[in-house]
Picture 1 (cartoon, rainbow, N blue to C red):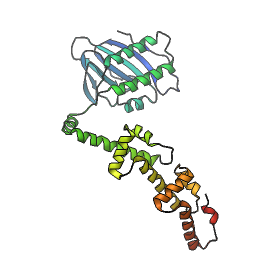
Picture 2: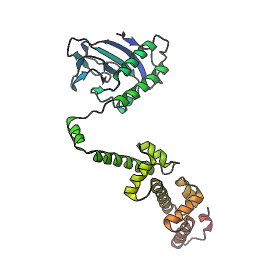
Picture 3: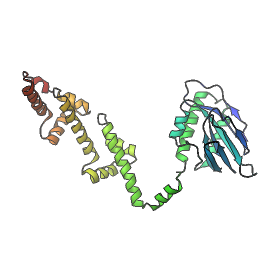
Picture 4: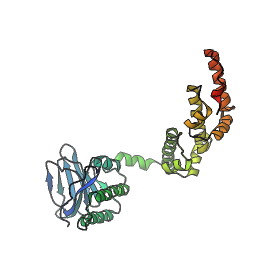
Length: 303
């Protein structure tokens, strides 16, 4: 067993830091005032129950992780006298809660980890590093952050009974269809959010976890065009909408709003709308002149 180890005073600039680490023989714990930082418990062997007044009780088995928030009263009661092993890491910092929640380690509840022994070994490595002169706070902060990310990837999906029944009732094709819908929706959302940026279709595909070919198939099924064509049409439509709101703007200004090269923009605009943006701008200016009785403004529709 590894004795309880505290680290030094944390640097106030650290959003995440190691507070303590150790392992112990599984035993009754009672903390009516909670703990000053987040606690990550890893049960290597044995079985027990975490009780949190006003929140509930959770049974934790070997190979599982349980996280308790700072200042939360709790107790741990082993189910047997087999004296299993319980490891713990204390994590503090202003970002600790947000990081743990985003990583899926909160809210409270047991999480089963794949390759549990790997994480147990890393806890002991962290403990020994304090003896090897590796206790510098900035270094340990990086190690803890990477550990949280790796634990997040290692968590087995948790479902309640209803979700499990629903999951079993879905056919493979239905699950694939649901996944495709989510990926397509996210891809379209990214295009609408970043149409002004130099965003390539391959980067969108990577962001939604699909290949370019697969994503193009989804666009063909829903819109009859490739993903690149959809994004191009979106940019052209956004440029046209912008010109509607800025009738005295130049072609170059319209082009800059959608992140396209001027000559390519003019060519694609004519293909999409039947006339060049310069002619459309001139037409809109003429309409404005008729409405406002203003003088000639030919220079405004120059590139």
